[in-house]
Image 1: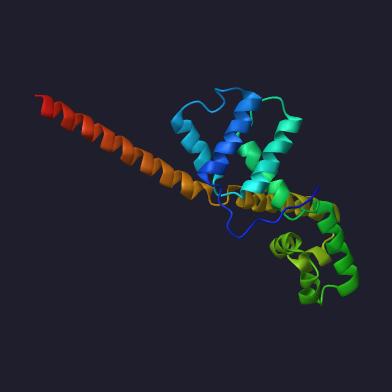
Image 2: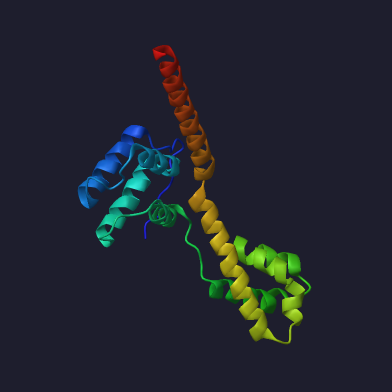
Length: 194
């Protein structure tokens, strides 16, 4: 799968987002998003992404799914398009096995430098020398796989979430402020009538 590079300025503008909404409505019906509030939430959760890559993610979704996408599904596809390819835990374990054979337990620093970021983090948790001296390699391999997959999920979530949560918080606060202003105007209007 082709990996895309995110532009320096990568926020989706309201106009670009409107283009995506029109496409989603054409595919999934006019009531796809519904209310203006729902549209604001969708925009808040997607506007931190690169428009061109998000557009590719939406196209990919539309080509492979007959039901409406969720924000999470679009962000997942987006993450796949921009993330460096993530190796399988077994590839990491193979690197560890080779490093043990090549460096032995006394050249831990050199072995650690030979690992990718995720493998290095797993080996730090398990302890390189502990792995070298282990008498239960099957159990160590299982623990390695479990920790490796957990770290991968965390890293993927970090990429996927990006800056969406602060944006959503800000959007909700702005929306609440707007509602407070409307409510205050309605109260003032009622006072003027009396």
